[in-house]
Image 1 (cartoon, rainbow, N blue to C red):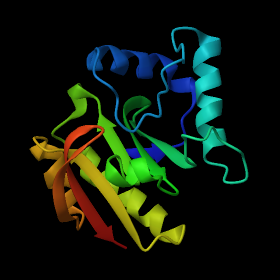
Image 2 (image 1 turned 120 degrees about the vertical axis):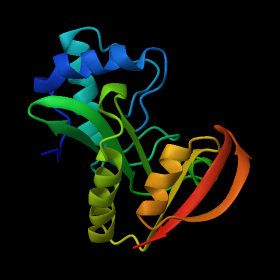
Image 3 (image 1 turned 30 degrees about the vertical axis):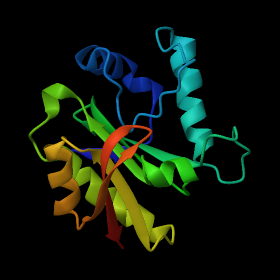
Length: 173
């Protein structure tokens, strides 16, 4: 049975294995920033600590970042993916990116994990007092569009964004 957990250094090997599956593709929802070196134990631990700190609304963040809570999708001690809840949106995130981003490692896709995880994080958003959340996905990402729609997403529009052509959905909580 899958569960959502706080990111942890204990799953470093499983996370790195997943990273190899993704190859050069970005791991949506993982909270990766350009300058981070996750190849070392120290670098990985620093990244995990930064993810935890980013969830603390009292902490000051770089101007282009927002507070966010990160969750890992795990099962039987294996990292399967990540999902992020951004607490607020910048103008850039309102255009593309939204409140929630997620990704499931290629070998774990097709099992309903993203649909399940999104439902769980919508409950977290509700408890945080959000009354609606924005989710975006690439225009041609029909799998993600179905996941969002299954969780109540209503398509607002499809537009060119800084991420490329994107579907923009709102979910009322």
